Length: 294
Image (cartoon, rainbow, N blue to C red; front, top):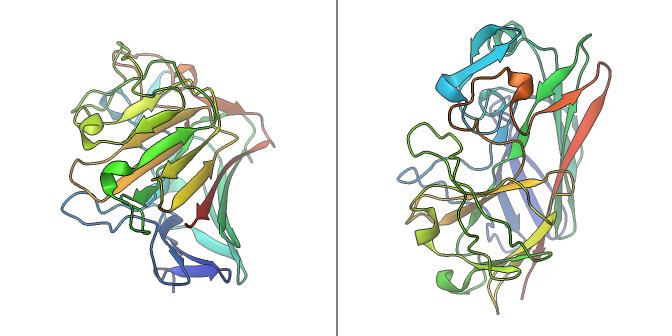
């Protein structure tokens, strides 16, 4: 059935994906411990939406193409679109989405979006492939939005969890406006100390923590003496962290693109973070999550 979760796995991990949004819902080990959010609706009922063809908010939800305005909500439409399962095996599955009359009414471009999940031992490999089957350039952004358990299973205290980046990340962070979700012009000093960021709910009282220019393309999330997740995102230069304070998850979000800067009035193709595909071209966006158990 189109609305049933699709399960794939190895002898170590099982992933469940919902065809609505091709959204990862769970990542469990052989003992049944889930490394994803509990999706408590008191905080946020999402799991891992895919952000396409925009990441974040547009000014007044307006996407302007060749002078014509279209209405496109925050994070785009992929997360609310039903994907077709086009390939499935015991350890992998591929979902497909293409433009339609409905998508062209809000985003006037031909596109394909294929989302492949593969479980290999302790690793979940995810690849989004955006293609341009049309006859004109395709501008878009793409992002992952997975919510991982905080604390992770394994017994470590929530307060001990941290991110360890692949290299020093001294550059400032950015924030978005609370109501409109637009990128604010001022930068803030980074909370990262060298390569480490101690996770604290206070970080998110002003909404997401955003790096528009990340130095590295990988990080580890976990706590000393507990479980760790090694997260690689070689194709995306930006990163967002987010949660609702009090919730039992942390969103670790590699992005290509971000919200409109506050006051942006340009064409969509001029939006910071947009990439453009030539007709007939495609581009991959990979994210791998490897579980390290203590």
